[in-house]
Image (cartoon, rainbow, N blue to C red; front, side, top):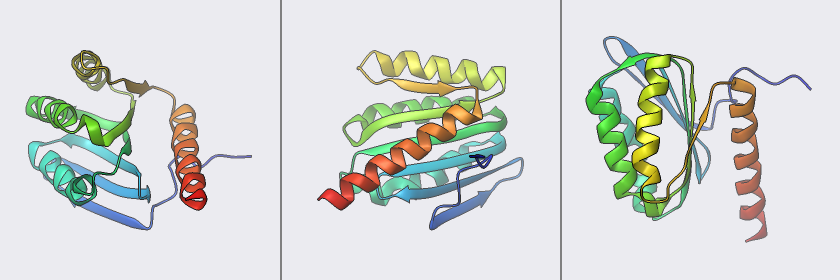
Length: 151
């Protein structure tokens, strides 16, 4: 069975374009969030990302977060710091975080954030292979769909 190179677009998909990059956020289920960044991940994109998830986080739902950062070329240093701080502050609402990376600079930033999160028992799952990342997205979506139908 051939796998699409990107997860199929979720029904609730939002996009934001900045000067040097673009971000898309979508919900594959009420509990599975998928973001995709291309180009430079700027502070205004990070603010938009957090605003996009604010409502669902406020419901107290435990989210599984997938970040497709394979096409990210660089990022503002404040983005890594702010997203790490946000994750620590909202760890009760985060079931897991999965990040696909290609750039060595982005991978180093993800590793640094992963160290900070591990100090409070959070594990950041990092992927360099798209197929593994997509398999995790599909598994999380299927798991959440099954648990919704059981409820």
